[in-house]
Image 1 (tube, rainbow, N blue to C red):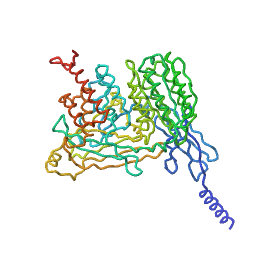
Image 2 (image 1 turned 120 degrees about the vertical axis):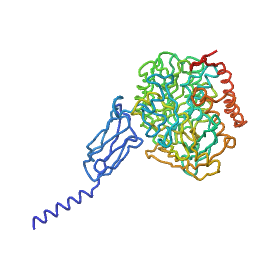
Image 3 (image 1 turned 90 degrees about the horizontal axis):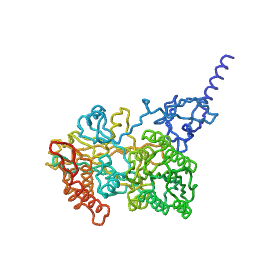
Image 4 (image 1 turned 180 degrees about the horizontal axis):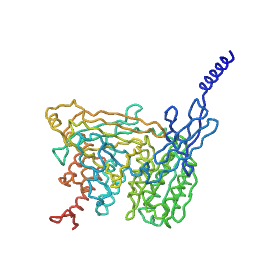
Length: 595
């Protein structure tokens, strides 16, 4: 009898323990004390996955007083922790060494599934290349039907190209990124329906430079944030005031640009100014947007001088942004520089690692490039992409006005992060395809550990991707017979709503519907002229049959008479035509000569 009672008591105790719930709470930081959001937490016993929130904190319900959790985040070494629910858990993640197998420092702009690195390496000769990015080539759809790309609102390449041509200088092929040229023109915008963050529209039409091929456009539209309900902003202006900025088109231009931005701020917004040059420090502590005179006075007092300690400036700026972090707000560092870092961290890899520490903190990074001669495009691009942000180049005051005034919400308010789009073609209609733009760096192609990392998309943006298509016989026959019921491609859009840890998918099926080029929407015709222009500037192997006058004709016929940006584009192509008409090739040589 006593034994039976003892067993019953044990069973009751066990059931009571199992029904009891415990709450494990804690926070995750990096080695420098920065809180890390979106850290993956594996509950070892159940296999459930949790994530840290915007403050790097977490709370997990369990029926065990002591449990085991595994914390992991891209770029950091995983950490296994035995957690006691009676204690607040402090977890520290350490950065992985750059050369470890899981470091994955190189990032791809696009990736074709199952296409091996060895096959991609055939796109360039050995270790030698005359460009740091390699143009995407034609891919066999039957073997490799799926390709993906990282999406963002970067548009720096176009204004940088404009600077070169305006100064009657040839454009370095490396400076031509066609996807950024297309981003510059926010054409045919359509508001996504209901509460959708994104909507997608596609178009299949003829290819002007190769009548045997087709062009396939994927148009992505992002939700417009209501200006009246914009969240409060915690902005930190990080301004390069080193000696290299002592030119009219550098620091003075930036001062004018920031004055424009300040005029858009509300009382609930705040601004701090951090400078780096002869000294690095806080020029203005966090100040309400309502105190415009105080902020403008601090901007006016900026003066150039000294070296360029970019590393220390970045560290101070993020520290200030972190100290004034607004939960649910728009927390952003705006870095303005010519990119000529000559003190502290200098290489792209070093800068990559520094910014990666802050990527998951919920603080965005907008980069504004200025200057000429020592303008370091690649360094600033690295910072923007690794800092979960965007990148613009200011070549004149009108561009500053466009980026920081007219496109204020697109530049400074993200609607989604980690935006990545995958397109899978139907081999019945597509024999071969190539993604135009989104070209990868040589180093990233060589690195077998490289991955595609999604980008940031701002409010009210119209982004477009373009493919050149080599059609199958079925495709050609369908056009001849006016057959339009087949599936051409499947599109999978992956993203994370801004300030949220939930990853979302939007799937879109694109039917086979062909429209002759002359009958397609004017906006798509204009985008085509931009593609042709970029292809010529890059000396693309696919642009051999493109003539300057064809670009001008298409752009002129498709442009809107009241669109100043489209008019400027036509003028720019005309200037380039005059400039590049001086280029001749030596007979029997593949190297261009300038007259």
